[in-house]
Image 1 (cartoon, rainbow, N blue to C red):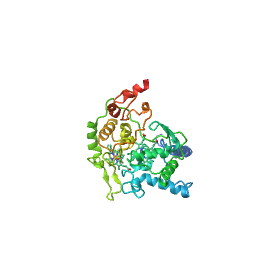
Image 2 (cartoon, rainbow, N blue to C red):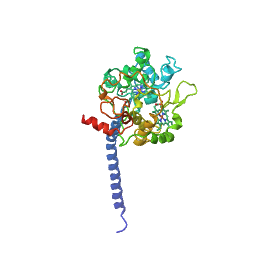
Image 3 (cartoon, rainbow, N blue to C red):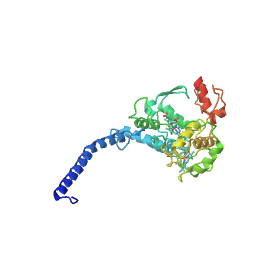
Image 4 (cartoon, protein in one colour):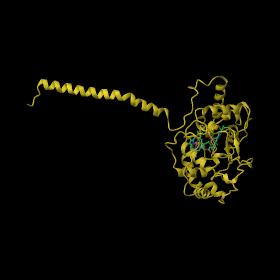
Length: 332
Ligand code: HEC
Ligand code: HEC
């Protein structure tokens, strides 16, 4: 009874073989289905991905040369327009890419994914319809504390061509996920320059310098680490001078190559506080922005210059707490 006859062993062996075969067949039948699902996921990342010059063989001839020159100008702006620029000496020596990472293609890195789809558009700062060239000029005058190149010149045309090519697959009027700068939740207190100084010492100073001066490359043409304040930094009319823009940019991107949107290195509090610290340091003052915000009620909550339509002080508009201002605006 305890010993199987060879016939019984034979039956068991056949049964096991059939079972293994069945499992194999089910696995094989299911495999292609699983693969299909995987490729679908891979083709649709949750955020905007820029087109690739290597893969785009529709882009040819003069048009291609223009887009490549535009990309070059974004990455190496200082070579062309910095204090030692070969086209003109009209900027502070920063590169557009210092603030628009990976030539304006990095998700959550203040990228250009929404430019071609949303311009021309009405902007409250100027109170007018703005073209891409007007918006690019703004960054030349404010973030680069300089003067803008000629609207019809070769350089401006190349920058626009590059931005339009970047957004070639983005449907009109849509804003892709991951473009621009993240809006962090407001703190329930004012941002603190004192706390921010500690964050700066621990997490920023090693690259951006004890006096926010950055570090020039040995050739003296462009920065290895761009300045955060002082005479070569962005001016008081720039986007980063608003705490929310600075905090959102830094939370997702700094320290450089360490932080990402998915895995930031700072807490929200640290990001707001270091923004308050850096934007309390001396920097160039923008003088020619008298015409900004023709409708003062449209000033962003964290626009640090009065007059304001809402009765809150300049101090509170600069450092917060911002929630009470947001609530008061909702009631209006
Ligand atoms: C010091 C940082 C800094 C530098 C340098 C800089 N920018 Fe900007 N740029 C910003 C910020 C901040 C914004 C506003 C982003 C926001 O509000 O979401 C912006 C916005 C823009 C926009 C509009 C984005 C949109 O989606 O509406 C364009 C276009 C632009 N920059 C082009 C340029 C170009 C071209 C250069 C180089 C000539 C440049 N920027 C240099 C910080 C900078
Ligand atoms: C490891 C070096 C490193 C550290 C640490 C670092 N940064 Fe940066 N930062 C960079 C580099 C490099 C760039 C320019 C990126 C580029 O051009 O691709 C940059 C760009 C910036 C910019 C935009 C350009 C400008 O100069 O205005 C800001 C703002 C900034 N960093 C803030 C910070 C803050 C705040 C911290 C600390 C929380 C920090 N960074 C830590 C290397 C660093």
